[in-house]
Length: 542
Ligand code: GLN
Image 1 (cartoon, rainbow, N blue to C red):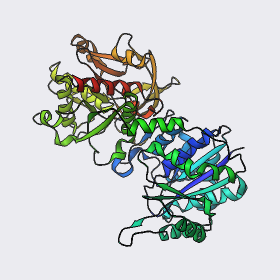
Image 2: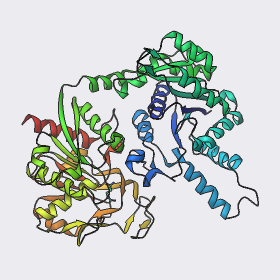
Image 3: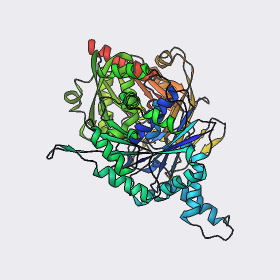
């Protein structure tokens, strides 16, 4: 039987509902249960694919090619359960489906309304495409009180009624702020938020109270009393030193127990959270440090490169070093300041990206890393720009560029007009296609050349990695490049699309057309990140 846990947020956004959901899921896994986590996003975009990273943080891509909320990345990293397209919906997707159906006349003359048509669609999503999971945790995006989340709240209220109260549980994540001038923790915002939730017909069963300090017994009792929640279900969620401590903290506060008791399941089984404490220890007590320079465009917002940050930290966990990230706004870099700005980096990385702005700064950083033999890791855009840099400076093609940019006469990187999917169908694209959902998306196989550096790193010839790009490196220069030591060491199985590039005469210079960061996990760091951080460590010790 599948039980449902709904996680809502109150007071302010960014309280870490995603991490809370992922941490609870991990605890339930430790109790031996099969879990799945889903995200319901109330915004009107069909998916976050067309949103600026400044608006929404990174776009997380699933194996099956969905562009989703970055919380799905937390879910995967914390639970190891591979997220699917069916684990994330938005209001936009719900309305798109309903309106398409309405235009086809499928509602048979009915007036199409938020209740029941939108709410039915949301309820259908919640329980759709499951594989006998014991628990499904559904995180509702946004904050209680937002107009756009109302249909979602109404849908979970109905779901709770339809499926029997004993089969679903509501967790509300709130904030208990400390007011310095009065020296007190304040419970009122939580009271108001729960009042709002109750006015929508939902009585939370558990409150997860975010706070920067211990919430005294008296305050917890007060919250329980005013919010109509049992005293032991008012759980404090104190700021953790590392995200890996969150499951341990929740366990110590009895969150898993309260959940299992609610569902009448054995709550007394002791579980061993050694894996979390070990990984926390590595993060908090590393034995050394490497500095990685990241040259990107959204460096002001850490969430814009969420999975990348995590994957680099996983590489650090594996190598027992702290990975300090130095962010560089690509527009501020040029060939005359790279030496002074990048000099103390032990590795340089250019992540995925879009558009011309800042691309010359990235190319300058790549040239610096290549010429000074500093480990370089180019991810997607970072690979394309590395090939452009080498076409200009090694092959002497001065005007080498990408057709993604306005003034491109010699496209070393060009629009991908045709490719073969994993089920052998052909995808075709043209310049005038929609931007949303039309990239080469999701997991694709690549074949690595035996004897190459990347083959040595993966220790495998066939790999599967997630893609999200519209352009590709032009294959026609492969032989010329090879004669100069620039090796296209990985290709799509049909041998047409370059997937990886590496330099022979360089300690570590690798570009990949895919996004390896999306598959890295703290307990299973990605081989490329392990190897890159190891190379940075060696560079530091030189
Ligand atoms: N802008 C490039 C493309 O669309 C790279 C995309 C990316 O880095 N994810 O091909």
